[in-house]
Structures are given as C-alpha cells and as structure tokens.
Image 1: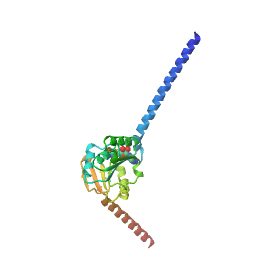
Image 2: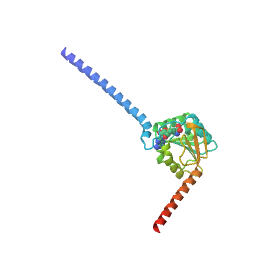
Image 3: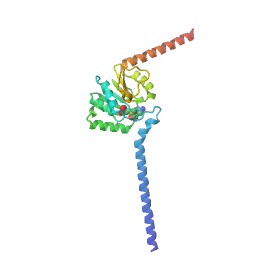
Image 4: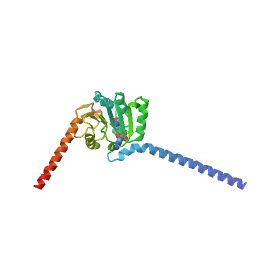
Length: 221
Ligand SMILES: C[S@@+](CC[C@H](N)C(=O)[O-])C[C@H]1O[C@@H](n2cnc3c(N)ncnc32)[C@H](O)[C@@H]1O
C-alpha cells in the first residue's frame, strides 16, 4: 500500500515537472519568436540616424507616380518598407528596386510583388542604404527623416548620373533647390534634377579648393 502511494506521488511529480518544462519551452520559444520579429523593426530606431518604418500614404504614392509620369528606366526606393512605392512604380513601367534593412519587410515585399504580378520588374534587397552605391539608378525615391538628408545629399550628388531625378517624400533636402513639388502637408513630394545639384556640389568643391589654395599661398608669402 505504502509503495503504491509513493509510486503515485513520484508519477504525479514527474508529470507536473514535464508540464512545467513544456510551458517553459513554449514561453521561451514564443519570446524568441517575438524578439526575432520585433528586433528588425526596433533596430532602425537604435542607429545613429533613426529611420523607422512609416509607410507612405496612398496620396503620397500617387504624388510620387505623378511627378515621375514622364520618366522611365530604373527606379530605387531607399528604405523601401513594405514595397508599396516599388510595386506601384513597377506597375507604371519602371524597373523598380527596393533597398531595405528589415528582412521581414523585404520578404513581405517580394511576396506582395509576386501576388500583384510584378515580380519580373521588381527586386528587393536586404541592405544598409549607407553601404550601397546608387550609381545605376535614373530615378530615386526617398521617404527619409530630416537628420539624414544632408548626408544623403552628398552621397547622391557624388554617385548619381546627371540624368537622374530624385523625389523626396514628406521631408525635403536641406540645400538643394527643387524643380517642382506636388501635393501638400505630409503628402508633399519634392523633385530634384541631378544636373542642378551635381553642378552646385561641384561649384562648392571648386570654391573650397581655391580658398584652400589661397590660404596656402598666403601662408607662404
Ligand atoms: C519612413 S519608412 C519608408 C518606407 C517606404 N519607402 C514607404 O514610403 O512606404 C523608412 C524605411 O527605411 C528603412 N531603413 C531604416 N534605416 C535603413 C538603412 N540604414 N538602410 C536601409 N533601409 C533602412 C526602415 O526599416 C523603413 O522601412
């Protein structure tokens, strides 16, 4: 009788410890899964320039397409989010690419492009916008934040061909002069011509160099 009771108690304890293990495992697994999904969305906020995922509004996308209606060729959306601008541009005839840091958004964009029948004219790459060159693109779209625009001005002026156009959504570039704008409020987009901003940067560089040469000349006399 005593042995049977002891066996019963041991069996119950072992069953409880198995349930505990299953619950701990499930909880741990869920936390790891939650972290894996959430981390890529939080990561941009922890970088030097915080550029979070905020999707363009429908009007914003329409404004981008409207200012680019007479253009063709390659297009890139820098920080492409869920791919809405890239997919809309591909439907308008562009060979459109998205560059995005968050792998979940890239996988989702690829799926959405396939579902909407534009997977042949779109591509999505998981990458850091500061580590790639934009030299191959003739149309560039950026929905950035004000803190990054001065740095991006220099990068684009250096890399883009002079035939390119750049469209900034919601926040304009700080020193470039736009050739036109479309929309209003948060849906405003600004259009910049590469010939104009490349000439501006070239002139500034030339000015800086001649001023340095002058300083050097003055220090030698
Ligand atoms: C404001 S959202 C714009 C999304 C999309 N272009 C749109 O208009 O709907 C900015 C996107 O840039 C991505 N991002 C942030 N830092 C990045 C980086 N260093 N390189 C590439 N993408 C980045 C974010 O994950 C986010 O999806």
